[in-house]
Amino acid sequence: MENKSSLKDELVLDVQDLKVSFNTYVGEIQAVRGVSFDLKKGEVLAIVGESGCGKSVTAQTLMRLVPSPPSVIKNGSIMFKGKKGNVDIAKLSNKQMEKVRGSEMGMIFQDPMTSLNPTMTAGKQITEGLIKHQGLSQADAKKRAVEMLKLVGIANPEERVNQYPHELSGGMRQRVMIAIALACSPRLLIADEPTTALDVTIQAQIIQLMKELAQKTEASIILITHDLGVVADIAQRVIVMYAGKVIEKGTVDEIFYESRHPYTWGLLRSMPRLDSVGDELVPIPGTPPDLFAPPKGCAFAARCPYAMEVCLEVDPEQTKLSATHSAACWLLDPEAPQVERPVEAGGRQHVR
Ligand code: SF4
Picture: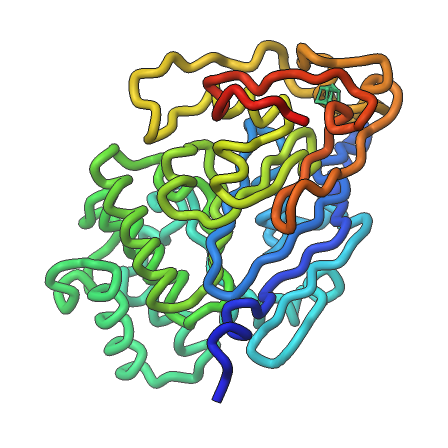
């Protein structure tokens, strides 16, 4: 029998030094610049950052959903522990990848209306993968589709299974997407802003549903979001990305209350959070750098109120702060001046 703690620590994903570029007619965009992280079985990992920070490209590269060309994986490995053992996603052919994607990974997109096929019933869209990847008969697949609709909280699933997307509400369509993504019992589920297109009440229901499903199915989830309230509610660990790099990572508490990177502080002050309703949101001044020609030093330097000379010259390495927490900032150097973490970014503690 498998030991419970070894199950919990089992790595489903181990990404090392991933670099992804887009070749365009005006040059190369370095969208992901050396990203490393891992994901355990049953864990929910949130990736946060402003638009264009590389979070969606990273997540979609894990499923090889970014079209190549124009995208190219320039470097790195994406070790995925599938049902048949470890594979490096970065090295699989498109054909091999199709199999992994259909049976072992699922994706939930932002807008179910554009991701669902309007000409197919909800049931048909759920059964497709079951017939193709699990070899189920038409009748068994339909039975499973009804079960899946029930699992994701759709009332009258026997009736809904025969309906088309336009006959369903926005919340129901998102539930159908989740049912499609979960139908083949994937080990990895990637949810890219899964609640952005929904109204607030439905958002809360979908997040609750994802939380329950993560526990029930033991699927590992990567959640891409700009909503820190959602992060606090569902994730165990967080990666903060900026200009194609991971600039800080840690547990939810480490990021919310002990963050050490000025960009994370800015993000915490600029994003809505559940535990500080009514606080004024402060946008981060300036814009992210041009990824056609990323700066040689810290990419956040032009917007950082603490930038020093060294920041403009040398990109800081990750500094390990605990077994789970690290950040890439020159302020963590023993020689750097001491600065206070802003109150709105989780406290008034000194950063070293
Ligand atoms: Fe600011 Fe320098 Fe830290 Fe970059 S390395 S975040 S510029 S203090």
